[in-house]
Length: 127
Image (spheres, rainbow, N blue to C red):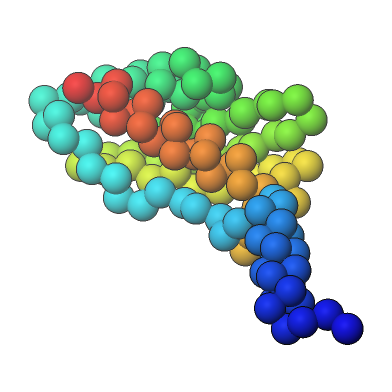
């Protein structure tokens, strides 16, 4: 007969293992991330967002003034975002994906890291 502490330990280890293997997390969008350099024109902001994205491996294309689409291809994974911007702030919103297990609320954990890296690169480019 197995003792209760052993059963609890095995259950805990199994829980930790399964939790660590989780590949999906809640989708993260960026909203109203501030642009602190108030001297930039909208054209300069657009150019810097596109450069930041390209430096991170994204294909960036201005669709309309104030909106840039970004596509990132990583192996078999594809992430698509729309970066909306003004002189005050920018947003990064999910626009589509392939092979990232998106179910309407959760997505492969790599997607959120790619978006955070893009946000950080945009901020660095605005200095």
